[in-house]
Amino acid sequence: MPSKNLPPGLPRLLSGRRRGLMALLVGAGLAMAAVTGASALLMMWLLDQAPTTGGGNIVPLVAGLAAAALAIGGLRALERVLGEMLGQDYIHQIRKGLVKSALATDRRPSPGVTIARSTNDLSSVRDWIAMGIAPLAVGIPLILGTAVALWLLAPGLALAVVVPLAILAAGLAMLARPAFERARALRRQRGRLAARLADTVMAAGTIRAAGGEEREVKQVDKAGRNVVDAAVHRAAASGSIRGAAAAAASLGTAAVAAVGSWQAIPTATVAAALTIVGMIAAPITDMGRAVEYRQNFKAARRILGPALAVSATQGNERRRRVAAYGRHAGVVGVNAVGANEEAPNGQTLNDEVMNGEDAGMLLVAGLSECRNCPVPELRAWPGQRVRIRSADPAVETRLLETLIGVRSDPDAFTQVDGMSLLDSGGRDRRRLVGYAAAGAFLERGSIARSVRYRRPDLDAAEGSAALERVGLAGSIARLERGEQTMLKRGGEPLSTSERARLVLARAMLGEPPVLVINRLDADLDRDGRQMLARVVRDYPGVVLFASDDPDALAAGFTEWSVDCPHAGLDLTWVAARPAVVHDAY
Image 1 (spheres, rainbow, N blue to C red):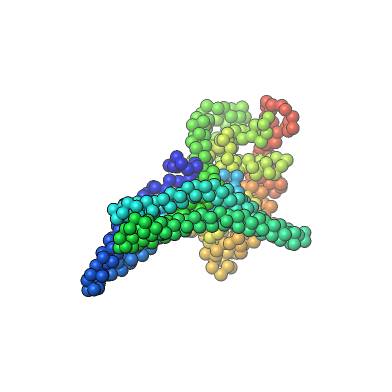
Image 2 (image 1 turned 135 degrees about the vertical axis):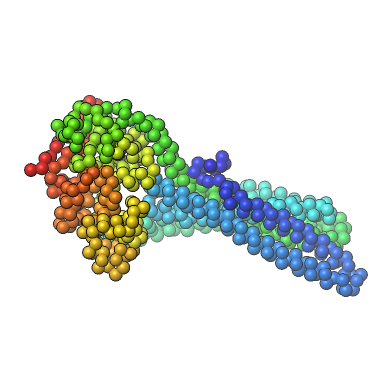
């Protein structure tokens, strides 16, 4: 549950094991306060007894001071470890949320922006947690405890320390806003540089072909100089914050000495107070840095919060669709696509409301590519071949990806085998639909993992059989590691045609009721296209495909026309044109 003080999507800090880590940090601060107070007493006793005892009884006191110093060192080390554990646990949760959000929607940022979020922004969050909140959790109990100890020694000495700290707090409040603005400016420039670098690297071939290397280097140089300038401006604000903290610690030492001299406080008491001030000097400096880290965190939070909220929004949208379309198939009568076509059970499809629970049936409704005209609804039964047709291939891709859930559309509804596909969990979606598209960028991993990526629950033998079915087994066997060959950079070392075969094998694995093929024939060689035609012919379920050469892909198919006949006109599409059935000759 998000904290009420944080943007939607940013997780709560004090949850799960992080509560225990925070408690340990506070405990470390209290322990340091106790050790600091004990050190002050030992120092005072040492200075009081040394002139009278001749040094005979000071050995235990010196040993006690040494033990206290070691304890302070150990507690500081523990603080660092606990702070890092707290910060890493928190950003690990955020990192998973960023990946989940990136996979939850088609409106993804550029790779450069994603990388920047995963490095710069998460580093800022980690710094605030590990080196901001953690030192505060330790430093506040320590300073309060030492203030009490100083008050017990001499109230004037306590005031001598508290007053510089109050001045420091006022100064940090004045410096916080400029630091925040400069941190935001630096983040913007870093994001632009990262996006430009990523786009430049991805377009390297095109840039070289056009002879634009020098121009792109100049653009990167310009963006890099903007980052340098923004970083220097932020460093000025950060330096002011750190300088104020260091000055406050030094001012506290001088104030203790001055008050001790002014009020004629015994030398031993003043020395004890100086010991306390010396021990809290480092935590005071850390707390000053915490203000700097806080401003960097606030700048990063403005980016991470909305990015993390995407997956939550998608979840809410899915629940809304469940409520809106839970009875869609049972309430809405949908005319089947296909003129005078016969269903597998012999019933005529046209002008008849069919049972939405028919096994293996595909129902698509609610799609729209034009504000005037909805896309005709589609029903198809196992064994049918349906070609989606549009004058714009991008429209075909957009609608295919929408109906299988890759793209989000709150009005879209897809039912497969009696189940709402877009409202089902990942396991059900993988079982119901297989998707094979041209130009697919394969994830990093072995070939054996890739072919079973859609159905990891199936045996490796079934993955091997799928590779054999698409004619890829021989090519993979010739690789040094066979199916254990690692795929990198989108599918290397496989060729474009081999990658297309692998994508098809993955989509067909387990024979989902609906197989969606999006221009895969464009990536296949001649033998591959012949193989694809056999797959389309023999596949037992519904095959929905897009292709520029549909006759070579399927001998008989139904065309699902998704273009608006009144494109550009302010008219309402009152009657959808029936689809054209292409029969096998």
